Length: 95
Image (cartoon, rainbow, N blue to C red; front, top):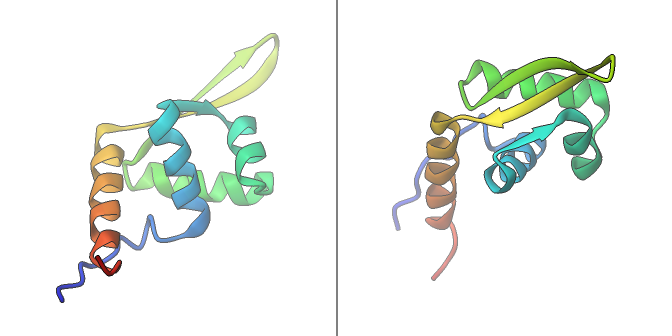
């Protein structure tokens, strides 16, 4: 059996959860991700920064009704990395 290497950036539970959400919705507000992942604001912030550094997401900071808003948007590179990760993970599952 040929096991594929798993992407260490995506192998983190929280980063994988963020990417899974963004795959389905394309972009999401920080508080939506925080609520769906049950992460603390600090931990979520660190993990989205790591995903941004890898080029997997873009972060858009803006204001809405005088409140700061952070939008996370998956990039084409992120979509490809996620698909590659899922396919690599399949090599570990016995058919």
